[in-house]
Length: 489
Image (cartoon, rainbow, N blue to C red):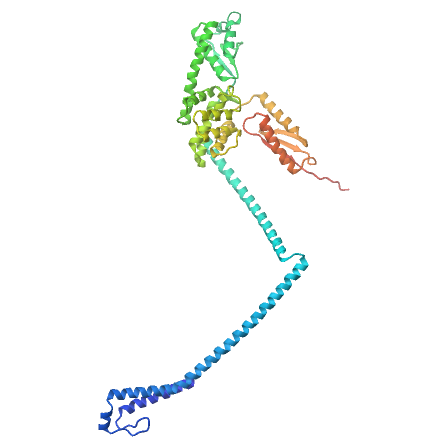
């Protein structure tokens, strides 16, 4: 680098001297010759030519001075490139050798592992993949179970919220109905006229209406007893009409009975229309409206079936709105879900299936008929509306005061529950709890294992559904307790 700088300084000085020489008269040329005289120099070169000639000379001198340094620099760079190429080639050869050695060592290691394990590489790979797959399935099962539990908790919380809101919004009153009706008499001496000479009148009334007329010491009252609400209502209307008319004899009784029966048909049509209006259902077939009105005189565990149906319709519509289902379908199916009870004595089969067929014959959609049929699990629920109708039916029946049972029925149901569960092998003790809404079965641990206990709970639940009648639902709990005892001396 120092030599190059020195050469550049020398070249600069020479260039300056040459330029000055070209501009000075009588100066000597750079080649050692004597310059021409003034006139001759003027004739031979012009100032422009002299300047160009000086520049060419300077350039030639610069090339002459710089050429050795440039060549030396290029030579050094070429030598460096050649050295690096040799290094790269050496490294490539070394890497290739190392790669060959690593391949040989890997093959030897694989062969040693195969001899030690008794497996080929493919078999070992398959075993490893199987282990990884099993671990992944186990982790997936754990994650699915966790998600399922979280979903159940969230769903239960959501369901409780929806049901509580629906029940709070619908405040319905309940009056427990019985199988008797009481007719007030204007005077106590009317009892004799109702009985008639030698009991002719009362026999005619009971024969026509199919209702027991109970005349006892109760002042100014006659009790009508019958399990069929329609027959009991016809008998009540007949007796009231006879009391107002005052003429009580077998011929008049028969005439009044048929008149009361005709009036009740019109009354049932009116009751059905009122129920449809209260439930906010439109476009119902007139025959269905009439049959719906007959439910006014039917009871289920003391709960009026028509009032229960209207309440179910309103509850189902509220829940359908909350769940994003069809409120129209849910409301319609809930109103008609017990309509089969009005004709169950005329058609064989469960009232849910009878009601579904009746709805189809009168133009109701398949979604409505299916929800009606599924409310007691006669068919498997396939739609959200069917499940909603089930929930509304259970909610209406489970309200405090909505339904009632006599003491005899209550005791008999509890006894039947305990007897049914105690018949299974391995059962040690049976307790009916929570007013018959839960049954706890204690099994002998040496006779029933955990899997059999779970199966016993399912079998008992299905058996109770098939053999017993009960309101609401019954929870079956099977308890298996194992104890180990020893004595320290």
